[in-house]
Length: 435
Image 1: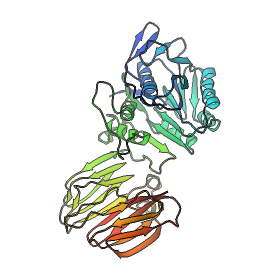
Image 2 (image 1 turned 90 degrees about the horizontal axis):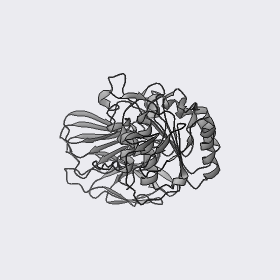
Image 3 (image 1 turned 180 degrees about the vertical axis):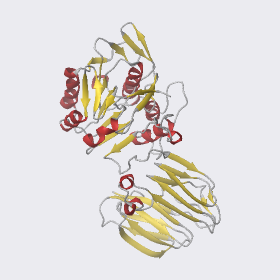
Image 4 (image 1 turned 135 degrees about the vertical axis):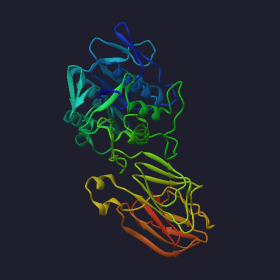
């Protein structure tokens, strides 16, 4: 079991060895050729090796993977300790993380960032409720909230990888902010000599893998980019101290994710983020915290339900045999925390449609996204077509549709809607986007 640790940050460290009075860090990420206009600060409190490893991963992710300008990324660490975080032989530490320089770090963001760029805040050390230790100082949730309010940015990403770091979320959540914490408000985080056990797969996912190791793919929505949300889900499933298999232990890691960009939240401590499900027979319910992929067959006579916190994807190979019952359902973390069953199963979400054994043509919806007009290709299938908003309210309903069915919602606001298709043989849904 790893050593207990606390950190806050958006980027983490590498393998570190001490050379004279400085640390020299292993190279974790090659340069990608990308460029970005972000500003970032990395705050390190203690001198423990794992803290330096996390800081190096964070710094190299920003500089090498995202392509940030070194002049826009500043590291604040221990007094009297020079640090080479990217292996170029130069000291990358800007100043101490003591109180005066901690304030200076946030002034750097305040004085340079505008509404046209993103900012990243990373802090690495031990922590308690609403508090994280720095070098002869600390960072509190109230302080961080005040500094965010004083700073202009397009989007801010804050990763808190410290014990009890989830306690910061209620104070700092706001528009255009994403928060990742490696622990909830009332539990420890964990680490080894290689750094925080959650941050390692988190940065691995963002970069697509570490140098000299197998590539990884956390692009779950196949849009060509790994988001912080996707990296969080990958890390949850690949942190050996966080997997649902450790749920019976009192020490296991429970990370948290909050973002104003998405209604999805991580609230369940024991569910896998991504689940791939093949052949099923009998009465079965399968669940995933984030993405549930169906790629097999629902056998004749079965009664199967897929539940997901965000997306259910039915691949081309997925089939529902005649005589089988199949439905998909979305669970709402916020409603679940309030034990509000009425909100818990508000609507259904399916990413792709089913290929059925009865020979019915594949159902497609195009274009999607659109300005509000869609063609729903039903072929020989006859189905009721219902459009719901994200609160589960019906805004359109058509009975016994078939063929190429034209759907028009141009008179409704831009946003995401749910298209529900119901026939005698199946019940499927798909998200549609109006812009």
